[in-house]
Length: 96
Image (cartoon, rainbow, N blue to C red; front, side):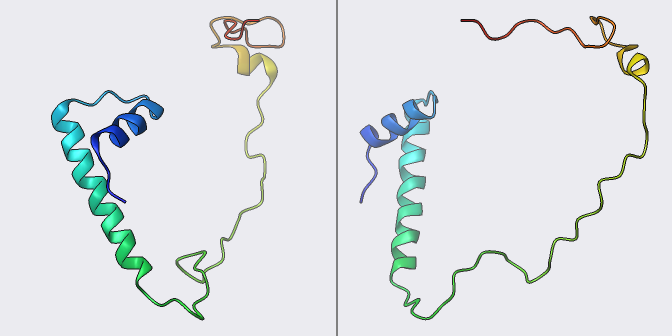
């Protein structure tokens, strides 16, 4: 597969990007290099190779979720620009 200007235009549109002519040419070059690298990887025999999920065998040690500081509702609302007795008030951002 070869990346051309129409493909870059379509991808830029989907990504909501505006590219100049120079940026488009650089993108074509970079994307073709990526596809060339992927073609090289496809040439490698991976028979019997397990998929790599993690880069290391280390296990993620999660800490317990412990409340370290408890504040009252009044303290939480003290610096809020808009609030009622128990809630932060924010501007409506979703309309029907």
